[in-house]
Amino acid sequence: MADKKGKKRAQRATSNVFAMFEQSQVQEFKEAFGLMDQDRDGVISVDDLKEVYNSLGRMPKDAELKAMVEEAQGPINFTMLLTLFGDRLNGTDEETVIMNAFKLFDENGSGIINSQA
Image (cartoon, rainbow, N blue to C red; front, top):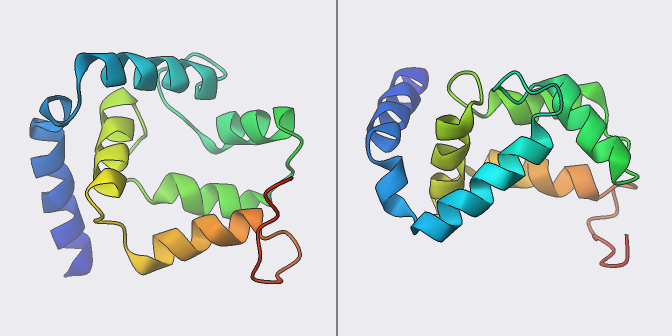
């Protein structure tokens, strides 16, 4: 049942996702998408994220990257990325999604993220 709700929410969100942002924001997100889509196939994949994180000096586990990609209700194209950003800006993230993002940066499991990292 939860999966069905998520799909319906994603469908509603993508129908008006561009209206949620200023044109300048959409352009910035488009540039960010271009940086993340390392292989330029129009979709952000686990391999794309791995390359981005590696370039930042981070080495997340494949399972963590896979979980990030699976947060989306389908392939992460530009419209889906905007939908995910919109969810975050509107505070509609599930607690588990937020916790998984935190754990990615809490490398030693201490419950603290170092701002200098």
